[in-house]
Amino acid sequence: MAEHIPAARWTSKPILALALFTFAAGFGSFGAVASLGEVARAFGHAVHGTSVADQMGLSGSILGLGLAILRLASLLGLPLAVLADHFGRRATLITYTAAGLACTVAAAASPNYWAFVAIFALGRPMLTAAVSISHVAGAELTNANGRASSLALITGSYGIGAGGAALVHTALRGSNGFRYLFLMAIIPLLMILALRRHVVEPERWQRPTQWSHAILGHVESAQRRRLLTVLGFTFGLSMISGPANGYVFLYADNVVNASSGLVATMVVLSSVTGFGGLLLGRYCADRFGRKPVLGLALLALVAASLLVYEGRSIGLFLGYLCSVGAAGALAPAGTAFSNELFPTEVRASVAGWNIAAGVTGSVAGLLAFGGLVDHFGSFATASLVTFIPPLLILVLLRHLPETKGKEPEQLWPSTAEVA
Image 1 (cartoon, rainbow, N blue to C red):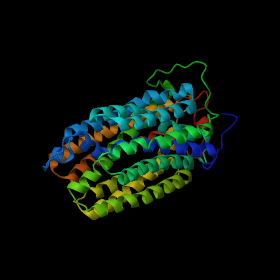
Image 2: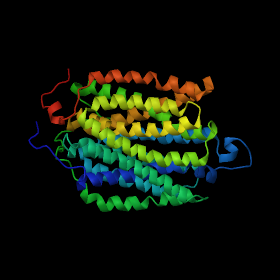
Image 3: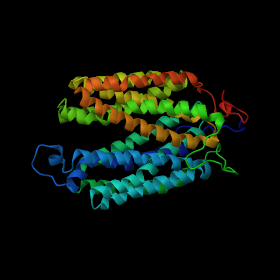
């Protein structure tokens, strides 16, 4: 076991610096989603018609293809995150966050829609990798008692950054509003450059004298079965969370015909339930264990998502608030669990593989849900068929050890082998 166990508090400068880095990454990442409508109108050819293409300026297929490219670009976060096992957490985090935000700023000068997609697709994997590395560093800087609190703060900061981008976009509506939004990413860029001296290298990480990891993240055979189990859980969870979040506003506008006031209230209140979920998840993960919280929060997420799509405004409103709260509760336990299950030498590689599993699971869920809506002509039926089968991933938790109160060195002594 390591002779020194770091015990940084969640309020310490290094943890707060990591939280601000994820805030910056959230602002940079969410700009493309928040401003998509204005981007389409600016680069399309809007006419006075009733179709999506007429009203938005670009066809739904072109918009969907652009979103798919942006989402799939996050897969490149895998090899980028892997490099943190060789070059260190600090250097890669600072580099990726700065470069990703620079791409967001550069997108303000996009001459057309596909240039916009290409620039964001270049920056998206760097920001995705930066968020994963922030979680890895946060887990390594703290001990078992403070790890869930630190990761809750880091995760919540990403959501605040994304929400900040949405609020700025609302205030800057107009033909060039999206350009001003992207230009404003220079503020978090300057902020993280000023804060970089507060980002420290975790003592747990040591530069390897020999680095045998392949660019796609080689994980030793002793850890491979555990890795596959974790990736299976991440894939199934993302199959649920992807469509649960991805279609909710389209559903609110076009199916339920919810008023703009209701949707605005729903979004504002969801920040409260999300924060409450983070606090509850952090407390329960430390008191009752990572596995029970993951299981119960996943069940709550599915129940809330089914309520969202049951067909009424009240279901949409209450279901969305509860689903954001359940997702918040999942975050501290999930990030702490995945980081505690693996040794320092491959922890960033595992984070990279989790990025890949999350992206592919989300894309699979989005495609399946959309196809089932077309097939059944019902969001309620599609949600049942899409969200219930992935609950089988709960069985995978039985094959993973509980990590509450333990340090990674206890789970992975130098001679450890996974049965």
